Length: 196
Image 1 (cartoon, helix red, strand yellow):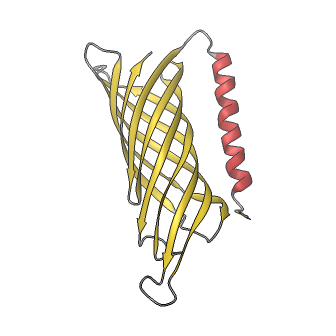
Image 2 (cartoon, one colour):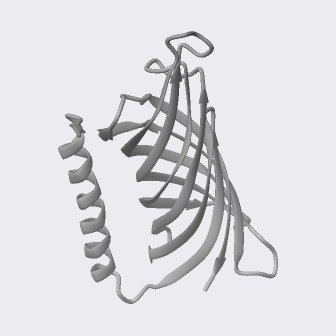
Image 3 (cartoon, helix red, strand yellow):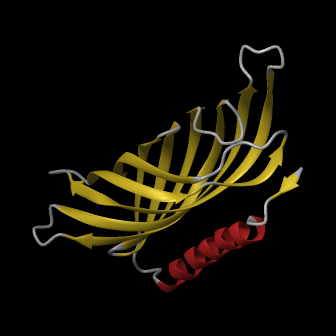
């Protein structure tokens, strides 16, 4: 088992986010609004479908919790191996701040999120050569990232649809097996949510 130097920082960020969520909920117990939804997040090396729960702690601020599956095809993007693909399961804790438009048709949104995923990465090296090597690595990944986008209020409903862009850093915290890629990452997502 290999521990990355970012392990302590990542775990600390996750605990701070959860602690802030608890404190904010206590400070704003009078205001409760919840949304359930789903999203599809795409990035150059994969796709992440998620189920989302969003808990508002004020009129324009919320905590987002996501559960998802990360489907990975890194092709030849990896600096560690010739080919990498696989999948993983995990989730997100994030804080969102909304900025309503003057016409009240939608909201701009910025967020700070932290993802944790357990990934199973199949790797191959020297493909088609006599010394071809392949195997599977199990990796715990921490990914802090920033997100921004716009949500449209759907008419005559308590639903919204949104498009966001994200940028963050994928950090392999614990690796069992051969090292696999980790790097900065950009993504786009489409999200739908409805009020409970």
